[in-house]
Length: 229
Image (tube, rainbow, N blue to C red; front, top):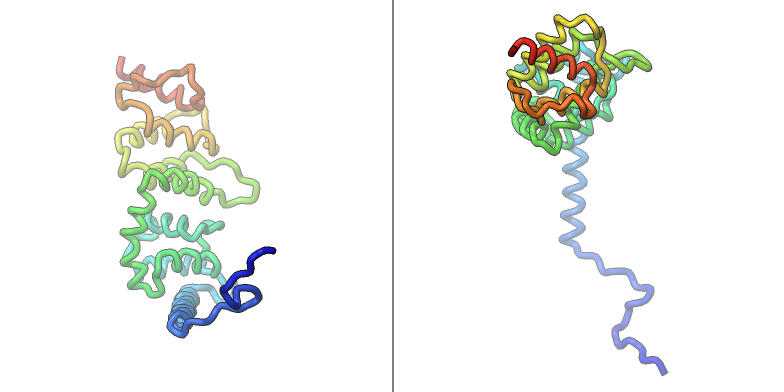
């Protein structure tokens, strides 16, 4: 005959509640609710009342309060943190996502969070995703898949130059003088990222044209080698 448990109340019983735990949960819930309320209030400080979004004008006001230029790379990093889908615009959901992650419910807290955000983006585990996002963020038209050369040069300068100045300067000079390409697509953009990370520069000793590099980089390397004699 099977033995029965000597412990009572194991089946069908509800766990007893701990008042201290319940109090903590209640306080945490209220704090989170208050934080979200402040995040929303901050959003509506900059949002356009008719569109219900923070538009380019609102972002300029935000940048002024944060004491950064609207062309500062950290503004792009903030858009990445929010996963903003439309260049120059932040929706309420995007704003909430970014500011909750940064634990910033005031302008002062957001300003203090920017250096840590930059460190987060610069981590190798995040930076490639940020670099890819920067290209996608600049696709402003429906079904757009490429970006004009001048905009690409500005974007390269913004996102890569601080880490890879010689390579970026060389690429930008080449892109602005070559005549074969008027636009750059995502594959070429990601090829630039791979190039600055993998290729010895300026000697280019480990660049192999037989490998799967975008043709524009083959042409760039050929141009560089010709200059070097």
